[in-house]
Structure formats: structure tokens, C-alpha cells
Image 1 (tube, rainbow, N blue to C red):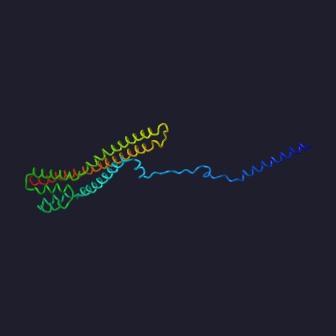
Image 2 (image 1 turned 90 degrees about the vertical axis):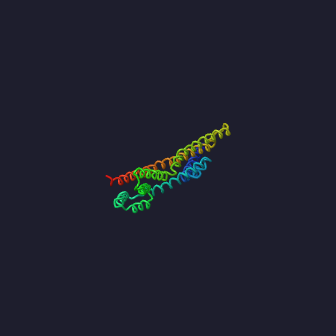
Image 3 (image 1 turned 30 degrees about the horizontal axis):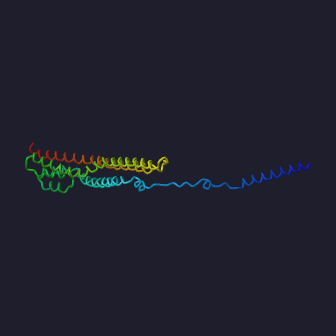
Length: 249
């Protein structure tokens, strides 16, 4: 009988303890995820930090970028002025010539900044001389104006070619740096060991290509504008010769 009572008390006590533990588990608030898991801190790199990681090769690449932008802006301004012309320019010149008002025609040419007006003005200044001499004078004026509109274009062409080469040099330097860092680390090679070389390799390659693309695209887009200016000069010179030959027909 005593043994039965002890077993009953023991069972009752165990049940009470289990019930208490279950209540404690229910009442205890769960810890937030920020306490259980460590807070992750994300590092970010600015554009300047990336350029610095590119190494010393980024200096000449940056200089080439500055020169390319400067030449691009200068050429855009110059070609914009050269492209400004009156659509009725040659019609007005023809009216002046037909009416014998040569001074007004020359004044109109001198007041314009377009290469077209410079070529026509040079031809008008030779009126009274043989047609071959007038044509030669306009050709000389056309070459002079062509030099003006094509000024500094070779710079963009050169930058478009050599900027990617500087990027390739940076790639080689970065690979050499990777192998050098690996040799210093011995058998303990981690991503940190080669990260500096990888940064230099990839950033210089991207920088050289970006500068090259800017210069290359600018060169060819501006050449399209120059071709239109040249075509306008040639057409105006030919039209002037036709106008001068009309009275003799």
C-alpha cells in the first residue's frame, strides 16, 4: 500500500512539472530573428573607389577620356557653326550676279561663317578671269575649309585606338599582380589574395574600352556631319560655275 502511494505521488509530481514546463514554453516570447542571426553589413564601392582599385594605369586612361571629351565638345561647337547656312543662299547669290550686284554677293559671303560661303566667295572674287582659274581658286578654298572642319579629328581617332590598348596593359599588370600575390601566400590561397589583381585587371579593361568606345563613336558621328558639309561645299562650287556659264550660252 505504501509503495502504491509513493508511485501515485511520483506520477502526480511528474505531471505537475511537465505542465509547468509546457506553460513556460508557451508564455516565453520568441526571440527576434535579428537577435538569433547576426546582422549582415553590406559594403558598397563608389565610382571613385573602383577607379582607385584600377591602379596607376587608370591615370593615362583618365587623361585620354578628358582629351576625348574636350575635343568632342570643341568639334561639336565648330561644326554647328559650319553647318549654319541659309537654304536660299545660292539663289540669293544668283540674283545678285544676274543683277550685276557683285559687291552685295561678296558681302553676303563674308558675313557668313559657313565653309560653303567661303568657297563661293573665293570664286566670286575671281570673276572676270578664266573659268579654270575660278575653279582652281575654289578648290584651294575648299581644301582650306576642309582642314578647318577636320581639325583635331585625328585625335579622336588615335584615342579610339590606343585607349583599349591601355586597358589591355592594365589587364596584364593585374594578372602579374595575381601571380605575385599567390607566390607570397604560398599554399594558403584565399579570394583576398587575388582580389587586388582581379580588380585592377577588370577595371582597367573596362575603363579602356569605355574611353575607346566614346572616342570611336564620336569620331564617326562627327565624320557624318563633315561629309554633309563637304558635299554642300562641292555642290555650291559647281552651282556657281553653272551660274557663271549661263550668260555665254
